[in-house]
Every structure is written in C-alpha cells, then in structure tokens.
Image 1 (tube, rainbow, N blue to C red):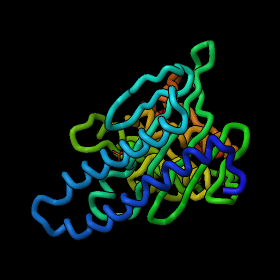
Image 2: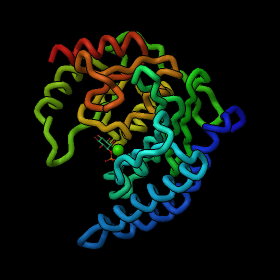
Image 3: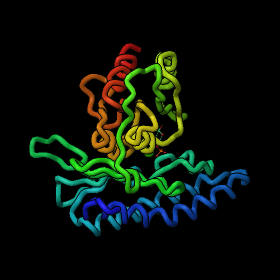
Image 4: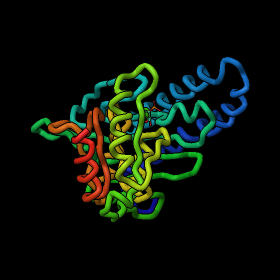
Length: 268
Ligand code: IPD
Ligand code: CA
C-alpha cells in the first residue's frame, strides 16, 4: 500500500499473514459441509488460531498496547491509551457455510485525556476477494490502493441499504422485523450479507448507501467507524445519546441518507 503509514502497515501485514492459513481453512470448510456434524469445531479452531496470530503480531509490533478480541476479551497493556480492537473472523456463519463473505477486522482505539475514545486506524480484509479496506485518521479511506468515498445519493427512495438480524438465542428479533418493515417501504432495496465489518466497509466504498444494525459489539464496528468518517460519511448510534463505539445500535451512511434513515428508525 503505497500511501499507508508505518502504523497502518503494521496492521496490514498482520492481517495478511493471518489470512493465509485462514484461506486454506476456508477451502477445507466446503468439504466439511457433507459431514453430519458440520464444520463447527473446525471453524471455532480457525477463529481462535487467527486471533492468536493477530495477538502475537500486533503485540510484537507495538508492545504495551492493550488488546480487545472477540474470543479472548480484554488484555490490558501497559500503555492505557491504545487498544487494538479485533474480530478475527467477522461473518463466522458465512465462513461456516463456505460462503466467501467474511473478513478479518482490526481497529486501533486511542483514548483522549478526557476519557473520550476514537479510532485512529482500521483495516478490514476479505481474503477471498483480496479486498483490503483501510483508513487512518485524517488521511482518508482506501480499498487496496484506491481512495474511496461514501455514495452521494440523497433520496432514500434510490438507496440500497444493508442491515443485520439477530442470531438465534439473541433478543431483538421483533424489533428488527419492525425496522425492516418501516425501512423497506421507503428504500430501493435491503441486503443482509452477514458481516457487519464488511457492511460498513461497503458503505465507505459507496456500494451501499447506508447500514443499520442493533446488538453489535465494539470489534464488529471499530475499523468501520473510522472508514465511514474518513470516506466522508456519518455514523452514529440509532438510540439518542448512544455511543457508536459500543456497537449497541449503529446507523451509517452518506450525510443525507444517514439522517433520513435515522428518522425512519427512530420513528419505529
Ligand atoms: C456477526 C456479523 C453479522 C452481524 C452479527 C455479528 P460474527 O459477527 O457481523 O453480520 O449481524 O451481529 O455478531 O459473529 O460473524 O463475528
Ligand atoms: Ca463479528
């Protein structure tokens, strides 16, 4: 990546190295579909292995930074101001079903003296399509070597919107259906592809006009929050007063579409 700083390059190198065995594991997964038990244990092992690789590479490159991973939770560092926020496989269900839509996603959070936090670098990589989305605070958002921007559409009626649905065993199914009902009547189309990190990267690339979801976690959204902003878009919590960094409710898009979508969601 010609334009990436040494900090972003650290993340890119870690993510690419993690991706190599992951791509091989993904190849195995399609074979395992025919076994009665399915590939569940195999995928869990691939997930843990990927997080371990990221943990080792990132902590080696920046000793002292904290690490928050989907699998291991928070490992505090000596440097309390910097934390890697990592999801080794976002889109695990897709991976498990041999669907090539998943990503490794890494954000770097920096805490300000007043306690506020911001993401200063983020990378989301779909190793099957070799699409590497990355952003650095103040330096823009890129897909591989090309700068990307959110879509400029203003009319909700023309907009293609992405969302996510709760998994089995999680709450919020009825709410999600009500929201889809309300949004679906006003937009050109809705998609649910199964990776929130890629959903946000695809909004940053202008493929989707906007994205909303409830019940996400910090590692699903960390890199994407920065990507949306660096691509000229807006991201906020759906719930008033909420903080998008916790992922509890997220609405992202180009400025006009995001605010129109937010109005619809808040009216549900
Ligand atoms: C999930 C994906 C999915 C979203 C879920 C997440 P995982 O992450 O991002 O799109 O709808 O809420 O949990 O479990 O595949 O890492
Ligand atoms: Ca995830």
